Structure formats: structure tokens, C-alpha cells
Amino acid sequence: MIITSRQNPKIKVVMQLRKRKARDELRLMLIEGYEELTMAVKSSVAIQQVFYCPELMLEAAQVALLGQIAHAEHIEVSRDIFEKIAYRESPDGWLAVAPELSARLANVQLPPSKAALVIICESVEKPGNLGAILRTADAVGADAVIAADPITDWSNPNIVRASKGAVFSVPVASAATEELLAWLKANNITILAATPDTNTQYTSVDLQKSVAIAVGTEKYGLTSKWFDAAEHKVRIPMKGKIDSLNVATSAAIIAYEVLRQRG
Image 1 (cartoon, rainbow, N blue to C red):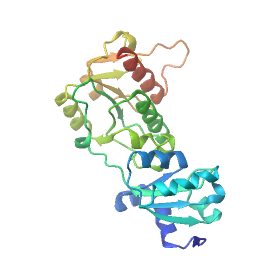
Image 2: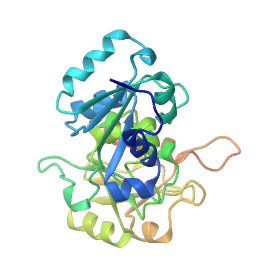
Image 3: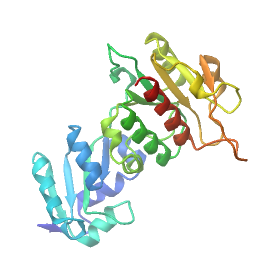
Image 4: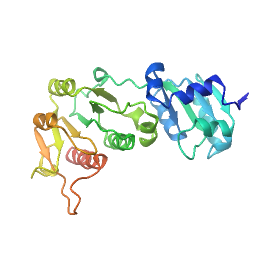
């Protein structure tokens, strides 16, 4: 049976999950896109429902993904309905419902035998920036991305999309700044703060021990709490007239320096 009505109760729930209030109340999230859903499956996310539309799929062979999610409810919908529930402009015929991401700091497991790499995002608001940071974290093998005093929830469908599913492959957490600072201290993790207001370049600091790269809001950067707690304050050289880089770009440059130093 193909769902063709916008009044279908299952369609109504999916529409509600676009809003954070509904995600928080139902403790569910949306995963849209073939690549994103594939990453979720590889990361053992417990998919509950899969809404799909073969007419929109880029490749007919993609329908084989349903076989990898046999435990979930498979719901075929018409093109009109899928375009209604999709949140991207050019949907590819895949959208799933899954439990919200666990974002408890206590669940973050650090490596016992090697130096940890954590990326701290203080009040970063834009899902696109958080998604880009997650993609970098996945690429460099970071142990976690943690939101300090978060504004956006990790289950936001736009973070799923912007991260290309890396939100499932990299451990994420949210915490108040005071709790997070105590956790970093307890785990002997050095804080490195990115700022243009220092003469120390990011390449001149030893990053081979456990480190947390702290980046701040898109408009104002890090607050004084993080600068006061940081052992290292570093800058990224800039030759132009603009005095700051995009927050995700800054995190990526420093994260790759960590990777370079650690070989």
C-alpha cells in the first residue's frame, strides 16, 4: 500500500519532527538522504520507520538498502507526499525515523591508550557549521564533538544533512560550560582556544597530548570562561582584510595540525 494522503497519521508525525519541541517530546529524529541513512545503518542506529519513494531515487539499486533495515517499518509514499515530508529541495526518496541521539557527556568514551582529540563548540548556532565540524571530526578520527551551552540539538535534521551522516559516526554530547570544564580537567585534556588576539601560531604548539580544540559562536567567538581555562591560545595566520575565519574552517585547520603532529 502506498500512502498518498497528507492526513495519514504517520505523515503528520513526520511533519511534526521538523520542530525541536516535537523531537524533544517524542524523543525521535529524522534522517533524510540515502548517504545519511546508510551511515546511520552502518553505525547501528535503531531505525524505526523508513519512508521511501522509488520514483525519486537516483539509482534503482538503492532500494536494496531496505533489506539492511529489515527490522524497521517500510512505508512507501507517493512522490507528492515525499516532497511534502522532505526538508531538502531535491529529495532522493529516503527518509527515516529513529530515536534521538544520546548526547550525554557521561556516554563519551575516551581512548585509554592514546591521546584524545575533542572538538568543543561553544554555543555554535548554525547546523551547517556543526555539520561541517562533524565531517572534519570524522575525517581526522576525533573522539568526540561536544556542544558547550548548546543552542541547536544534535538531532536537528539539518545537522544530519550538513554532516553527511557523520553525526552518527562521531560521538556527540552537550553540556553546560562548567560541567564540561570539570570533565576535561578530570580527563587531563588540555584546552586550546582559537583566537586572532594572540601572537602564538597554531603550528607552534605541541598537540601530541590529549587536547580539546575550543571554537566559539559565529559572531563573537569564545567567551572569557574558555579563554581563562585554555592552556594554549592560538591564531591562524591571515593575509587578507577580514579578521576571522568561519568557525568550521578554523576547527578543521587546527584539527588537521593535530593529525599532522601525531603522524
